[in-house]
Image 1 (cartoon, rainbow, N blue to C red):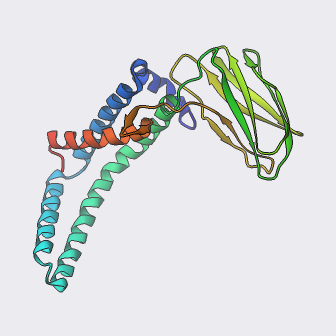
Image 2: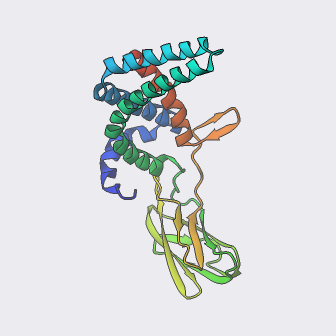
Length: 253
């Protein structure tokens, strides 16, 4: 999915068995594994003796600042020392980030392509939208390759905002074509029983068409106090919990 799509077969092998699970358990397990990976890398790419000493020093300086509330000049001096210590601590932490940042970005990109939205199932009706630039009025027509069919009107006349078309089809990857007056555009869509999808939105912004959008249903991983959370929001919550747990278990500072 994207620049690192050549790695998809590897990730399919790793994450494929988990994709049959409910999205909640899939994100829960992935969050635990990635959090453990990050904590282990952090532990062995930082000087833990130094990190422990710096953390202890920060606590002592915080306590000293509380005791100096009535002495602003002395408080300022202690604050400067604490900022310097914090800076040393952050510099050590950044070393670990250099090892984990790129792998995590690649994994996030892959996960976004398999769990962010529900897949378009074979025979399921779905829609795609052509959003015109403000002030543009145009005729919009759609055409599809073999295996996919338009279930409603295949042309919209005098569109001044958004043209929505509906489709359904057999499993496959399709290039859906849109003719907007004298211009032609295409946007790919994936029909599959697997938990996978192509990017929903394609930005155009050429003065006629603003964007083309496949109207996918967002995958809801969990409902938290009335908030419906997708994979990323759920991942953030799970990863915070797991990171705290693994740091304590592995004595990481």
